[in-house]
Image (cartoon, rainbow, N blue to C red; front, side, top):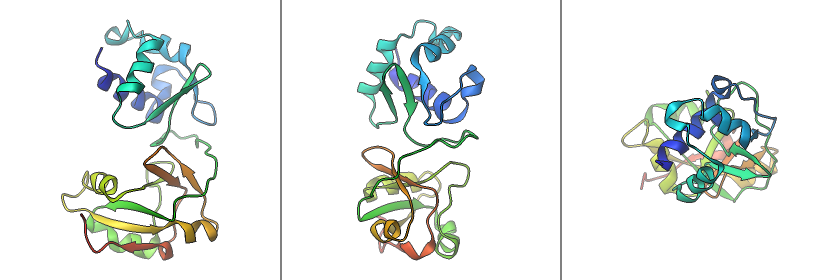
Length: 183
């Protein structure tokens, strides 16, 4: 089984289009594994997928995108489904990073960061991840430095996505500065 393809399919289902598989996520983004497997198995290319394959998919993943608990599975971040996935507010690291295209920097410094087509704004704990994310839209992305400690003190709510990713509903511009380098 191609676990990379299965992971991408899981991300699509759990982050963007559960209704295409007649699945309904609960308010925290969870769905019953048996329901998910039944829905997947309706497609010829996934007809042999089993619960053990989901465990192997998680073990083989280069990034922690999903989690399994108590017979359920969910995507940890990146949702674009209409219903808001409820996250638990947590204290973030002092500094976070956000990679973006050069053309958006002026607007971000004026208006702050907003989730756009996603449910949350995504931040990384390191510049390497921020550069990879920003590089999807610009070959020379700008790395923004987020004063997460000050933002949290001022009432911005942060949510833990995974080991490298933090989320927020939005971030006002006063907590954002531009890194002197994209390295």
